[in-house]
Length: 94
Image (cartoon, rainbow, N blue to C red):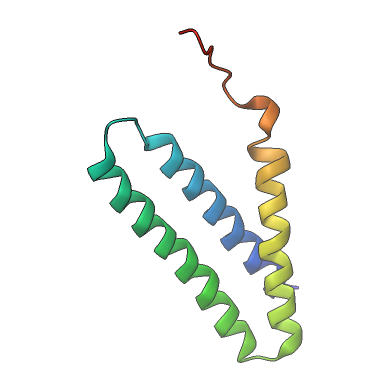
């Protein structure tokens, strides 16, 4: 169960950092936006990869539990923390 919890924590951290990155993007700031997205993506991918590699060194069951935690965290972020109905609705006409 420790691996499931670790997967949940890293998955939620990944989702929250993605939300933070998207919140910082502004139109017209391509030069600062691209490195922010690229480095953030590498960090998120690196954390998930490190967790899965470390879990796989302990066996198949810990690896599957860690993956399940990452997968569940993604759905927690989508449905609970950042649901589509809570997104800001901006008018097309300004």
